[in-house]
Every structure is written in structure tokens, then in C-alpha cells.
Length: 121
Length: 107
Image (cartoon, rainbow over all chains, first blue to last red; front, top):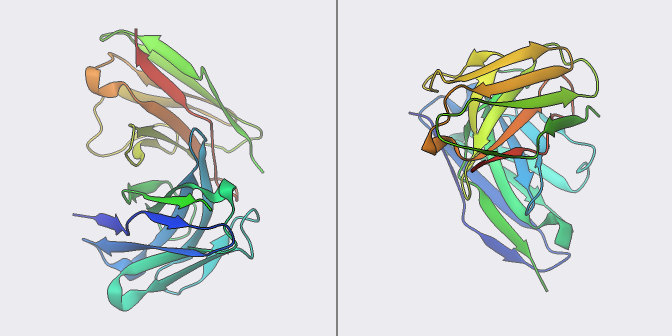
């Protein structure tokens, strides 16, 4: 069955960068889109962007354009999100999630377990 | 951006109750709406997509309805496992957006 397994919790200083991974199994990685969503403490879920795991093309929320980079390694069936210039407001649980379809206009049918990113000096 | 709003933000109910959560979009999203359930410390889990289609494996006590700007999630007979937070999400327009959630608590 489908699994998305994310890397472990991170603690970073303000101004640093963090890279979180999401390893997929149980399906053909390159045929789906992977989204990244984050949830700050007590806040709503916030969509950040996606990557087409096959073609490698990406789409980002304007909110994060320029500060977030989503990549993938098809040989490792893994997607990554890197957030740079971290600030306290970036402290959140970061989730990867699979798009049910292949065009980015679908719900998310499988989610990773989440990765807590703490930003603290 | 499409603004999504849910009501109520908190709901107290008992096992066996029928509960309804409302989700409103700031403009028409046709029926491109999903409902997710999230428990503390866990990732969200999809319940309903395309406003009314039950995800495989989800109990039939969950149902969704609506179109355009107003949608509802109904749990027909609340079970102990259903106490959680529920979120609606639109996937008609980018950026994809979620509502603030409804926490279903035990009365």
C-alpha cells in the first residue's frame, strides 16, 4: 500500500535553511504530484506548493515564492522541500501529501506523518 | 485567494448524535471540495472529495453535500473515534486553501 515517510524533526536558528524529505512507496512515484502543506501551532493548514514527480515541474504559493524550493529524486522516490531564511513564523509541522490525480486539481489521498520544524535562537 | 470559512469552530456532542459542519467559500468552487479529519499529532485523513464522494474505507455515517459556495459535512451517528478536528479544503483555484477547522468534542 501507499506510504509517504518523512524525515525527522529539525531545530534551526533564525536565518538558516531546512530541507525535509518525503519518501514514497507502494506506487509509481513519477506518475503523481506531491504537495507540501504546513500547519503552525493552532493554525489552519496552509498549502505551500507541489512538484510533478515525473516531469519535475513545480507550482508554488505566492506566499512562499522565492523562499521555498521543492525538488525530487525519482531514483529514490523522494520529494524534498527546502525553506530558506527561516523565521519564527515558519515553526510548524510540514506535511507532504499525494495528489489523487495528475494535474494538481485534486484532493490529497495520502499524507506523510509530518515533520516538526522548530525555529529558535 | 479563495477564503474558506467553517462553522462552528467547536462543537460539543455525545456518542450517537448527528452533527453537521458547514463550510463556505468566498466564491463558487463548483464541487471541488474535500473534507479531512485530523486527530492530535496525526496527519489529516481524507473523508469526502468532490463535495459528496465518500473516500474508500470511510464509514458511511460520514456524508457531504453542497455546491457553489456552501457545503456541509454530516456525521449521522457520532462514534468515539470521530472526536477530532475537521477541515474543508477547496481545490478549484490556486492557491489551494483550507478553512480553520471544526473541533468536535465530547459533551
